[in-house]
Image (cartoon, rainbow, N blue to C red; front, side, top):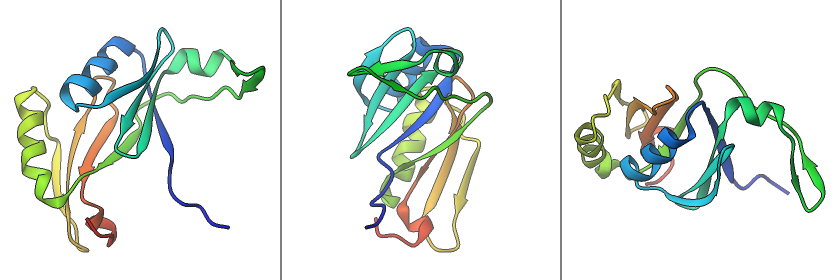
Length: 138
């Protein structure tokens, strides 16, 4: 028995419309579930990005087939990294800059690979990186 990876990760926002626009228009993610006013879920490769309105997620219990999902949420800015091929860093930087997104940092990592850091409209720190930063194959 072993953990096989991370299936989903969550970010929290105040403005769901701004998040929906950013993640679809700027990053090109497809929507899996659009559940205003509380949430929108996106396909990110083989993974899922959950975006919740922080205040509602922390205070409203969701029920699925009669089972209450534990309330969760956080305040403040979170972080997540999108997995990209190392040779796509330049193209992603250009796409983000063309959309008016400020690149906060670019890092060349000791194990290889590069990262670029930027923010979503809620201030969450996002990263695009090659898995080579962790010594994993592209």
